[in-house]
Image (cartoon, rainbow, N blue to C red):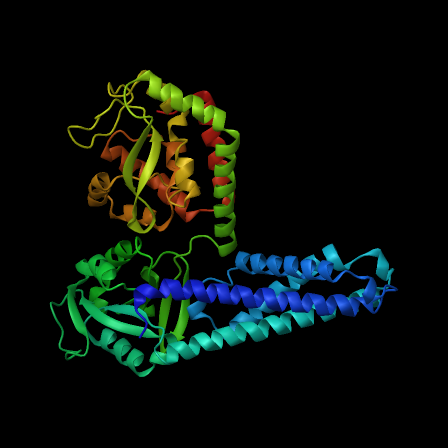
Amino acid sequence: MLLSKLLKYKNSGLILRLAAFDMLAAGIAWVITFQYRLEFLSVSIDTISYSHIALNATLVGVFWVLFYSFFGFYVNIFRKSRIREILKLLTVSFFGVTIIFFLLLLDNYTGNSATIYAKIFIAYFTLHTLLTSIFKVGVITRIKNLIKRKVISFNTIIIGSDKNALDIFQEIENSFDVLGFKLIAYLHVLHKDSIVFQNKLRHLGGYENLGKMIKRCHIEHVIIALEPSEHSKINQILNELEKYNVKISILPDVYQLLIGSVKVNHIFDIPLVQINQDILPVWQNILKRTFDVVVSLMVFVFGFPFLLFVAIATKTSSSGPTFYLQERIGKYGIPFKIFKFRSMIVNAESQGPSLSSEDDPRITKWGKFMRKTRIDEFPQFYNVLIGDMSLVGPRPERQYYIDQIVAIAPHYKHLHKVKPGITSLGQVKFGYAENVEQMVKRLKYDILYIENMSIAMDLRILFYTIVIMIEGRGK
């Protein structure tokens, strides 16, 4: 059986294969349509450059791969349904064909004949959809066969130790080839152990060990199968799972306890609720990441003289390095190094972690100006460029302070569902926090941002951040 930790490489290979097949199908459909179109023109095929046709076919293929990516065709490729994929393809292909038709196929050569236009459009749509469907169904069928043969599987853990958990266990054992769950172990909630499994499944302790087990066993899917008497623990379990990149399914009798978007799947004759952890639609995620990369590149290319000036001013204003690196916690609780222009004296935290205040003597004179205008944060565009951060998102904190915040507000872990940002709604509405209590107060703005996250929201936050920088109202 394929090891869980190697699935990400398998996933990348299959995505490339899908994209290659989509590009090939799109190219073939375009060439056939182009030749069919020539039948209505007074132009001989011999007068058309074959290199021109090949170039157009390649560009059209690239367009379709990007277009499909925009609509999430290359996401969760191991869990796809052939029927749903074809139905989705029909809709997306119609819009894509319409775009290409008006850009490349609609011209003066065909005159004003609506009949000719209709024939070309229908021919292209039919060819493209048919060829692409054949390739997609072939790849999905191949994936399902690999799952059925247990070449591909998904390490799964059950939370629960009574009848509901046993029912799920037996259904999965009898129907492995449906979704490929590989049951690793179970965690109890209220019981120290359970005899219902009768040594059929490993017991790894209580649900308090969930995070540790996810990392140790490379868990990819968590099934929550609690009894009615255990429902009081559901929020704690979901809060813990928010910082891990795992799929979550739960019995529908606790549906009313969930907040957020869910998708019901009837699996193994037992309906499970699959929690959708994708806050943004795929196309908005792609657009947000593209915007992050483009803006970051523009800052470094066009803002290089300004950044060089700030770097020199930082270096000459006080002794010490130009940049300051510090470990912060990012998406899914993964630590990373954040970059900033140094605004404090060297060894400012020699006595241990300490938050800064407005009149903090550790802040240099130049550092105070940078903080008010927030230009000390500019090196974080590098963090955005490499994918650790986004332009907009909750500000990342250190683990030292996260532990203190979680003790007061456990829902802080909700912030780990998204990438941290250079600026945030909390920064705009509240500003820098000088202590843990203020961090907790600022938390409500970050939660509000996540629950209403959108590209439009990001643009508004960026606008108000620029206003704060110009007015020097940062702290």
